[in-house]
Amino acid sequence: MSLEELITTYGYSAIAIGAFLEGETILILGGIAAHQGYLDLPGVLASAFLGTLLGDQLYFYIGRVKGESILKKRPNLKRKSEKVFAVLNKHQMMLVLGFRAMYGFRTIAPFLLGACRIHPVRFLILNIVGAFIWSITVGILGYMFAHALELIVGDIKRYEVWLFVILSILGVIAWCIYFLSMNKEDI
Image (cartoon, rainbow, N blue to C red; front, side):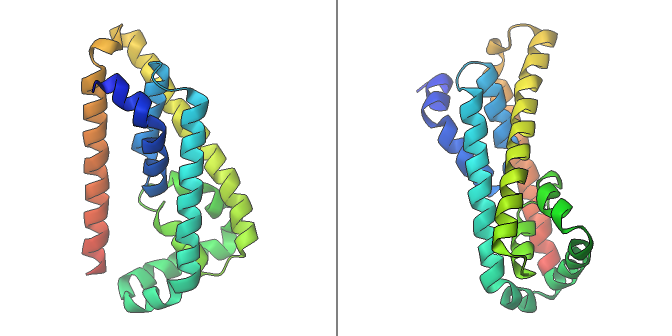
């Protein structure tokens, strides 16, 4: 199966799953794939929107149901969460709208927001707005990155396999560094 066939067959699903888990790298790759004509940009944006919205809602409800007990078992996380709760009390709306833009905070924020008992309807409405802004912004940035790269190097189809591989590897490395640093801090 060629790269083109893989992307056209599994691209939207991969974007939704990637956005559910973390998102930026996979959405940038989706924007690049849309620029190259493998996927439609509106489909990329919709997949990312649904993935991030559902992921954040799940993490929110886990925090709402199990947050207090999990925080009691992890003193380091509890100390850090107290800082978030202090910010949350002052800037609740901005935090819910903007946590996706804070790398390394994106997956823990909905959990903490659930743990601090924000009303679920308020979170849902703000989460929809934040997911919409994030998916459009990052997806279009990926699309524009491919466009700018094409202006610089010409026909990027010759380099697209390497581009996808390098960006994927960088995304995995960034995720691993973040994951390992989070686990080290909890020990």
